[in-house]
Image 1 (spheres, one colour):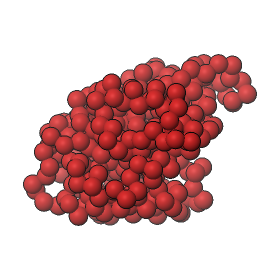
Image 2 (cartoon, one colour):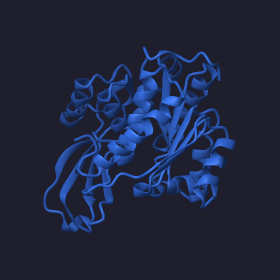
Image 3 (spheres, rainbow, N blue to C red):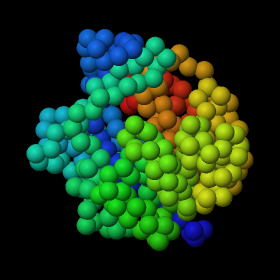
Length: 307
């Protein structure tokens, strides 16, 4: 990658889904115990785009929702904080996805999703991937758009074009193993996105799955050897490590855990915002990591990711 990276005047193009998290705002162990659901903004990549914009970064979301009341509600929230919506579509005859969400007493969430989310990336970018990447300063992707064949094609085309143009690539696996046919397929698909990445941000379980290494130090080394310039691995209350241009260990931040929904998204958004603001200056990752851990911890003390 060239040392002459795009400046902070361009958006980070975030490729992925938006949906409505319908959250039961009391702790239950199963969906049949839930008695009321409250709507919250949701979707892994949409969360990151929105929270990074709130933190002062410039982002754009490529994807879409149904052309219905819930879709317009989501779009309005993105527009309100300044997320670029040139590649975000309201799709006719598509139901905006709703995730019926319960949170157990440990703060872990379970989802039952109605409607299709990630296929909106195809509606948004098919035939226009290269132009979208060219008009952006960086690209952010996750594994959520790697499961289906069409979504994978769009995502990998975007990645390849970003690397060709020497645009910074930021990758957060966000693995949801229940969506994959096997752990092997999940790991292989995720690892294909590592080479050339400016930053890979993974949690401890994802890093172990990607590398086969139980030790996080060795896992970080393996991800770097696979081609990532910088790696951040988070391990919940035990903190995070950064390995790359700068080596840094950051302690965890205590939280009164209500829900872990969106905690990782908040952390990733903070790092992306700082990178974008500084023109993708690599030491900004280290400078922002302590604050990112704090923001992620604070997200655990509320029900919705973007509340």
